[in-house]
Amino acid sequence: MYESGPIYSPEPRGLTMAVALVLVAMSAASGLHAQGLQDPETIDKIIGSEVQEEQVEAAADMDRVIKAIETTADNISTVRKTTALDKIDIVFLTDTAATEGGPPAAISAKLEEHKEEIAQLRQELEGNALLYHAIDSRQILFRDILAIEFVGSDVVIYAATKPAN
Image 1 (cartoon, helix red, strand yellow):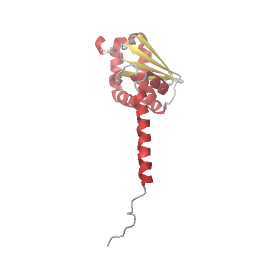
Image 2: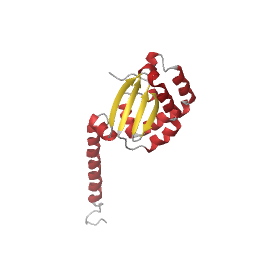
Image 3: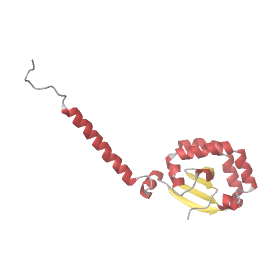
Image 4: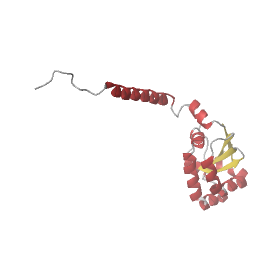
């Protein structure tokens, strides 16, 4: 009828190895949650570049802002390829904020002319970890980015907003 020998059971080593791998993965994940992407030190490591802010009126530097808007199509591919920058300069164009009535007429016309390219630029900025965290860490909404300008290994980001307090 029945033999009185040992009953076959699978080797427990495979199960033990799987449990060990799950525990290692869980401990690594907890480390990520502890530091998180809201930690200023982590953001600084991702950006790895000096980030400066300044406030100007668009009317004072209208030609430069318009030129940056006009070169948006060229700058989209540069954003895709950007992995390191020496300096990121965020320029708050205080007189272009919605609370101030929006951009001056000349800038507004250029924004309308290049609106599809600017929408694509904003998507590319969101997809670039370096630039995303530089912008997001300053609490700038991507819809407020008007243009960018690359100058050697530096970038100037023009935002139609006032800096967060």
